[in-house]
Image (cartoon, protein in one colour):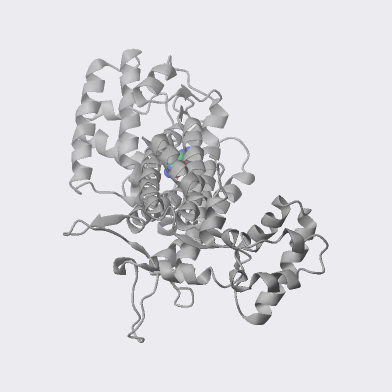
Length: 476
Ligand code: ARG
């Protein structure tokens, strides 16, 4: 068969199985555009430094332009015999332009080349993710604003805790994804450093200009140690960790959508195009998209652990183990990008012909309201009421617990207990009864409960609107 780029010192070719086992071309050709961009910057620098001729550079540029076209048109013949994206492109270049193609690899190794390609690729992926997080957030803000004062029970332990607004609940996810965006932006700083010039591991004997290459490729700075630059993949691990956290947040939201959509809860309905049916049960409408988001979080976590494990035993510098970095990395990026794309849509809305805005998450306010009457959601408000009249909080807690027992026995909610029965219930707690007045029923309403949590971070509709306004100006 055709000689390999490195076959000079070998007396026999690799077996077909070894060839297939060691090749990466069918997954690393995703980085073809980055590989070519890196090669062009390298060649430009080589020519500027007088390491190759101006005519070599011109040939390389002409050949690469041709190759870009071939790849775009799907005409490029990716070949397992040439192992990876780097050797495939270099071989084609040499076929097209001859000696200049053979000069391209001067002062360079595939080790610094691949590290550069991954960083260029990942930088683009991060920018895509940052844009999509923003789209998701804009959709969430719209829905939150629409429901800035739609009450539902907030839960702890999945038991009714206190009333919150649906807008407030949604804004929790805005905050989570705001931190996710910060993590990606921070990771990007460490991705955006140039390995090229490190060559195989020790640097090169040629008078290269690394800063110039960094500038051409838009890198913030060069990697300062050649051994480190070709071997570490910590930036990819950081990225996968950021994806795992993003997916964890979206998985929690998914779990809530699934729960809310269950007829046993019935808080929302999800637009049909995010659900699928059953091949046996004709009535089914299943929330497949959120379920898959929850499921795909598992693979994102797997990718993170794969990369951590990949690195932990490697001596400096480059080892072929590193070729295994790409599939988990690509998969985490793809998972994050697809999930965000679909989620931005799912949380979004469209305007009907009659001008009405219809959200893909359809909120059933009555069901949320009904859930608030089961579980004594305003018990804390009652305790706070007594405290404001001078009862120590622990005594107030005890007094309200007694009232809850009465309500539970009667099968009603706290506001339905008449004042005299409320007093009887609390009679055992010294100081409670004389602090109870008819005005207590105002604090027992859901609206009163919500409005009174009126500080930054609280669920009062006024505060939720302020949070949405703050968020909007941040995204502007
Ligand atoms: N395909 C290789 C990778 O992904 C490129 C670097 C190979 N270098 C080497 N000396 N074998 O890591």
